[in-house]
Length: 153
Image (cartoon, rainbow, N blue to C red):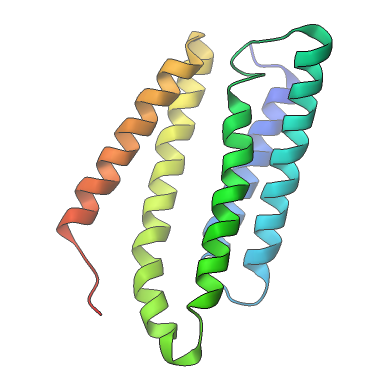
């Protein structure tokens, strides 16, 4: 059975995912705000988990392994944000939109598949294995779908 805090974090991550999907189509500071929210939640959750790990010795996958994702998400989003900002001059806006459209779809798909894998793994008490399988499956789907459709210049 999930604890209330785990359910709350699940909804917080769902909210961040929805913000991310909305932010991908905006250029008015919404993306920056979304990245900041993801960073605050990720770093904050990692601090809580590491504190619990040090004080209680809690090495459960839900307390230790997930910190990789908690820190990796903001790092990747900050990098993508910086790249997107560099490619936004008015003459390149159409090119950026052609690049962004398949990326948004892929990001949504990866989030859904990996999140589902994590949830299934958590409920079966095989979090790491199920999340890893889901990540490989998501990467395979993205590579397969990207190989058939490349946007033009």
